[in-house]
Each structure stands twice: as C-alpha cells, then as structure tokens.
Image (cartoon, rainbow, N blue to C red; front, side, top):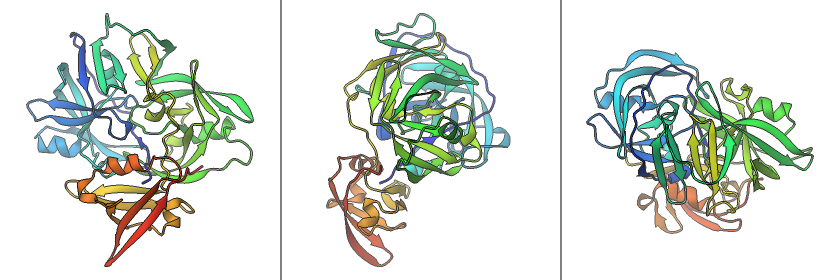
Length: 391
C-alpha cells in the first residue's frame, strides 16, 4: 500500500489581510499524517482543507469553486511538479477555520482531483502561507489540535527555538543528514506539513552533497504532485537532525524527475513523518519555530512495507485499486499485480474501510502478514503479503 508523498508547490501571486483574534483551539484530523481542518468558505457547508506550510498561497479545488458558483478569473497554465496545471484567481473569499475568521483573501483555484484518489477522500482546498503568516500556529500532533494565536502577542511554548527563513513565501530551516561516510551533510530544508515523507531531497542536492553512501541500497518509487506523477528514490540515512534533535535511521526520499522542480537550489523538504514527532509552533513574523518532543518522538520510521501503492476510486472512495507494485517487494512476491482491485483485507470487506486504514496497516512492523482478497478481471485470488522494509 505504497504511499507516494503529496508534494504541493505553486509560484503565483495573491494578497491577504490579517485579523486579530483570541487564541483558538481547532481540532484536526491526522489522516495520512496530514493536518486536515474544517473550513467554511463564505456561506458554504464545511469543507475539508489541509494545512500546508509548503504551499505559497491558499487554494480551493477548482471543482469546488465551480460547485459554489465562485468567479474564477485570469485562468493560466502554471508549471508544477509533474506538469503544468490551469490556475485561476477567486477574489475576496471569506474563510473561517474553526472559530477563526480570516479576513477576505484571494484563493487560487487549482484542480486537486488528481490527488483525491491518493488520500481516498475529498480535498477541497489548502491553507497556505498567506494565511499561516498572519498567526502564531501550534500544531499539536499528539492531541490533534491546532492552536491559533494573533501574530502580534502570540505566546510561544517553552521548547527549542530554531531560526526560520522565509524565502518567496516558503519557510526554511537548517537540517543535518548523518551518513556513515559523512556525519554532517548540511542543507536548508523547506518545512512541508503537506508531505508525508520524512524528508524529500532535490536531485541537485542529493548529487552535489554526496548524500548516498558508497554502494548504498536505494529503491526507485513513483510520487504524485499537483501536476501529475513524479519519479524518485527511497533510501535510509543514519540520522536526520533538527537543532539538537536527531531522528535515527530515517527513511527519506529524493525526487529525480518532476518537471524541473527536482533541481531547486535548496536541499529539499521536511515532511510530516519528522514533524509529527513534535509539537510544532510556527511564528513567521518572528522568523522562528519552536519544537517540543511529543509522544511519537521515539517511534520507529513509519515507511510503507507492503511494496505496493493503492489508490481509491468511486464517488465514496471505497474501491481500492493497486496503482504500482515495487519490483522484488513483498506485494510482488505475493503475486499482486498493477490494476488488481482489493476486495478485502484480513477478511474485512474493503467497502467497510477507508484508504487510510490500508495506509496504516502497510506501516506495521516487518514480518506482519496482510492477507488480501483481490479481483483481477473475472478472476478472484488471494495474496499473503509479508511486510518488509523497502531499504
């Protein structure tokens, strides 16, 4: 049940005005390690957005904008990882996030439907930099709570403070990769709460910094971005450090082909697989981030151990189809093929499950057995997948 981390990036212009308010606690859903928040757009029913520090501006799914009758102006093609997409502007949109009313801003209308099968649910929009910069935000992954405070006078928790650098509406922090051949591979990494990966390196940094140890084992994997599919590598590192904290034996990725975005000058991204181990406070106005280790800090690396990538289909996202099978991986050894439909998992009908259930199951320890009932055309067959780390 291979997950390819969602990589969201957009370089376009927009404007927003901040609004002061009291500290507010907003519950969030942590499906796939992301921060899913309930958002109201105008008088519309509550929609499902993700909080994404890696996105320069806030977005609304183009199909949702159409359903709501919003006026989308100035449509144009914008280069994206995976390929160009049509983007338009929706001006003067009033958002409410929990009890927080955001001053009217311009949302970018972007087709996000290609990402919904990957998360197996609606993705109505993205809360990006233009909203995040207005507040002091604390993401408490353990309690699944987002604390929103005014940017002026926000109270930061006691913890380790790291410097943040905002470049072109993207937040960057210094990190260090430790490898057997080099214990201090330093880079500037973008914080990306919208990526499930521990870290995703750009190809230029991977090669120029000599990240891979001589003879190191890697796996070629697909990914997905706003513009379509991407190609990358998966491999292990001895450690990844943020400030004084080190995540040992992390499994990270690198983008090899992504419509030119793999050659950015920064090192890459830090995603939810690292960030979820902390309570993370973001103070963009103060150019700082505060980290407090959480209950998940010492968790072993959460990586797909099934050797396949399953996506959801259907209006209710309850049909699960195998999109990719890793050569030589556990799923391949069990006879799973691309295009197979998952009928049941460990005897439980797939119609009673959500895609996130399969995602969590694929991250169980090595040696865990997952029994699949598969439909392949007119043929029904079973597969016994023994989970194993890919690297």
